Length: 196
Image (tube, rainbow, N blue to C red; front, side, top):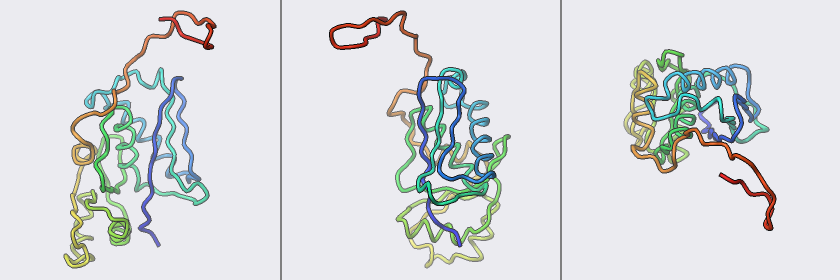
């Protein structure tokens, strides 16, 4: 079976060079997450991300429903999207889902189970699905317009195209930029306080 929607959460914290992945992930999915981080580090400046973010920040990616095993490469594009969204402050558009294996050069590769994935997105109330362009023949062969209903299918070739379609244009949170470290700490009447 297939076609279940999974959510990918990403957060950051002060630290440096630690990358944590949780959610009962199989080896292939963990490799996809590592590739997503590598691509983001190599290409993030184009999206307003500080190239040194990983030196000063720890990153944690979690895929909820931790008791349910998850594996496969098809969430690669979504992982890049989660990381770039987190680090650039640009939210992902509402009611959007995506699937696609990624390469380090930014190509989005075809995946299996397209029909099941699109139908799963429809059941979840998704309005737009980003699919690898090489999967267009699968959609044409397996999904008639009456089955698709009002779901918009957008075909993508590269991660840059994924991000162009997936992310809102404006940031709502500040992107990661280096923050000066406090010079010293002291205890005051209200507890620890940083002096800048």
